[in-house]
Image 1 (cartoon, rainbow, N blue to C red):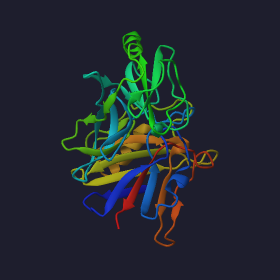
Image 2: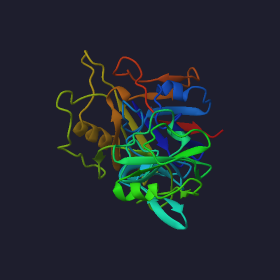
Image 3: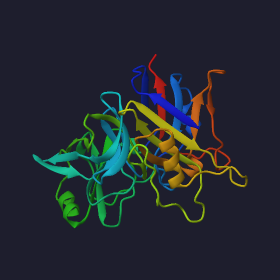
Image 4: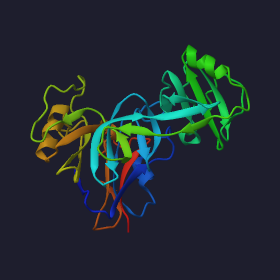
Length: 316
């Protein structure tokens, strides 16, 4: 199932389909009720237990989740073109006039350093590690003692987490009533501002017309359902391909080398994996009915719940 998007058509818009960072739902439910939605697919890899994405999500030029560790991404630029590359969280907190980097924001795992969580995280516990501590902020002011809190922040709150002895001691030195200001940002290697971005996996096309080989595949089941995304025509055309797998039949997916060949055949100049197996799903609004319809067979026999979908909308 192949979906191509003409990026020169400015009547098309894009956006994440999600409720909270750590909350999974069927893609059809995330898409439901959005009358301008034209199509949607799964996007990015996620943790089954917590339900949060492994990598970054950016929307309206603000990070939704991310870390300073560089992650492969696909994104939409300020020029309405599709780009791929590396994305890093570039955010800070300022206390007593001194600014410190934020190493994580609403992230699945708490990296060393400082991390911030907001109500956008959801109702799941924050995965504060054994060598971490946290405090709650109310309207940007420390409103609790330092402890190893894991309950997520409520509306009007946020949670500041420190991991590692240096940052734990620093957080413990702060008292209730201390103001903590934060600035959220990110950096990419794109030549334009990236307005929204989503995590991707292995790069399966690095150069137009060149198939990659020797890519790693799972030993036990190397040909599952797959989803890949790429671009061509000087970033002016987005290409999304979902390959179906129906276990127990002769309909199966592709390994990563074959996905590279497929995306090359479709004309991609660059392409990345975009999760797969039971997560691989494409929904489209069919002209014959005007309704959204799941186009592929779901490899689990039913929709796999996911935290984030990728939505393609018409503006009018």
